[in-house]
Amino acid sequence: MFKKLFFLALFIFFLFPVTQHAEKTVIIDVGHGGKYSGTCGYSGSATGFCEKDANLLVALKLQEILKPTDIKVHLTRTTDTEFAPYLKNADGTTDGGDFDVRMKMANAFAEKNNNNSIFISIHHNAHPTNSFRRGIETYYYDGVKHGKSEYPHDPLQIKYLSENKRLAEVVHPILVNSLRLPDRKIHSDQSFYVIRNAQMPSILVELGYMINRHEEKLIKTESYQFEAAGALAKGIEAYFAVFEVYGSNNERLATFSNEIEALSYAYTVKSAISVLDKNRQTTIYVKDSFRYVLKPW
Ligand SMILES: [Zn+2]
Image 1 (cartoon, rainbow, N blue to C red):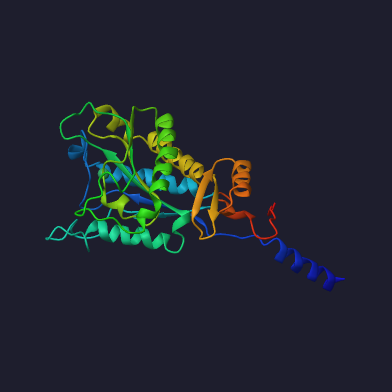
Image 2 (cartoon, rainbow, N blue to C red):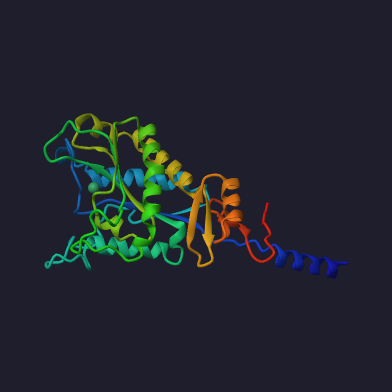
């Protein structure tokens, strides 16, 4: 009897192989740190509370919020520290500089799991002259409008241009709605070092203007930091809650928020081979000569 059951189980396993994928991973880049303070805002130079502190407080709360979920979290720093003694080499290159060391660490966290990893760099904003400026901005790299030879990107980042945009479009409205600050929009016109060198989908968020007296006050409160961290967590979960359709070379053909739409696309489009439930990290459909549908639950 046991033997029969064993062979039955084996048969079912080969007929309906459930493909488990890697873990969903988020790399939280905590902007600035150590001797690189970032903006010290409206009153930071007097109080000693600068952007590097605000970034870390939000990042640590985000890590706590995501702890009970199935999303693996890495922070580029958990203390007030710089990554290298200088931002750039004397010749202007960044090899060995703070950004370079930071991104080597971030990319190592995503290694071999780049398609299921995302990179979010947390910052707070300043303006050199306008202390009335307020609001939330989100940046992603589009690799086209400003792809300049003096600002080279990581070749792997280019694979994720459409995902950078999707990540920004998912996270930004959640931030604006949760934090109830002016919507200063999504931008793709800056090629910041960290987002153009992330070997995974990436965005940089500016969670308010510290140069603005009112916003700085808000940014210093624990409730605002929790709101910001909670909104980022919601955005991260929403980003992963999709169904991706893949072709025979494992290239992503389309992304759907609806499972039925993804399955019907995969069924009708000739080049579509499989559907990944990105949230469950499970392949739910594989097309081969038998044309069967896998439903592991
Ligand atoms: Zn910054």
